[in-house]
Length: 480
Image 1: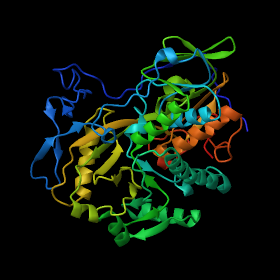
Image 2: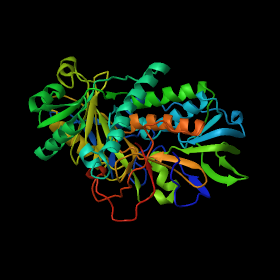
Image 3: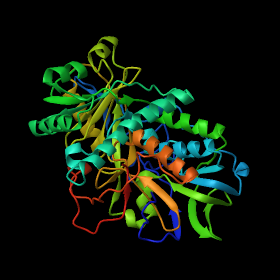
Image 4: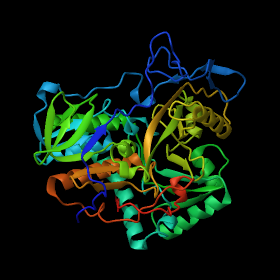
């Protein structure tokens, strides 16, 4: 099935660097505007001149100053997968913009199909949402199933959920085949409810889906999490957790070994010239017969018609120090991924080395302190155990759509775009990368991502509220 065309012709697409932390000069740790810089010696969260300190769960005193450092990097600088610019050919079969999970999965798929591929990245591989999320590899899609069937027939809605379920299997198979060391752990996921309305919604979804997921009562949830506060939850044993940055690098290294050229720190512009697409990003033009824009939340900057249908938002994540051995036996003993069915949209997991990773929506922008403060307050309220230190935090971008479903499409010039995973990006980005790589290679799609969905605009609430917009619908191809 061919994809719908974007209503606006593509003439020139400037791809600007997707950065969310502003570098500052040495000696000016907070910068002139109080923002946090990259220099590891100065990565303290500041509000004006006030340093926000990490909290301890006994709340008796401030802990050490919090350090802005992505836990998944392991305390090391970002890894470069760049190919020397001189080695990048002047023409390739396919070009991919964005070296995240989508772009690298697509590039690997294309290379394994025998095509020459170049990937262009504004930063370094895994520098966006792919390497900065909470590490949850979830089944399904963002919207509740009962909300999805309000907009379309039940068969199509079930197909979307099956695609999301298949996405976790795709990640597991890729990790095994490529022998990626990313702490992939299939401990399931637990969607928990703080109030009776959300609990009843989860119960309805469990009945409608008739999947391996099962409802748990208050005591069963507390036994799986290690602390109380939730009325119940829906447990799906098929989900997983992972180090998403290590997963991204593992796919990227495999792509390089398969012959993919990766150009990092590239400012990209796409034009149509002599019947071919031209990408300027390697110091000289590179022609490509096929182009995939895999920049997720940064897509609206590239395709103006997406601005009302896709948004870039930021998530904040905090990480504790490793819990002591006794506490690890009681807190998340099976290491499931946990997320709340609530407006807070907080999520948490326990890593292989015993840290709690706790995230949610950023407040005050990508560098704003409000999100970190809120997460610390929520974490300490949820975790009554004493002496847990929270020394680390980071932020990262993600793309959301009005429907909460991933979106992809094709411009009249033949450029394919994809993004808007809306909180389910680790699994769905790999699924869509593989699917669109096959589409570019073989001009046909696997069954799971085909089909169209009603376009849904934004309301004043989160995508999970799933309220259709009264505005003119855009022509989107959505994950099925």
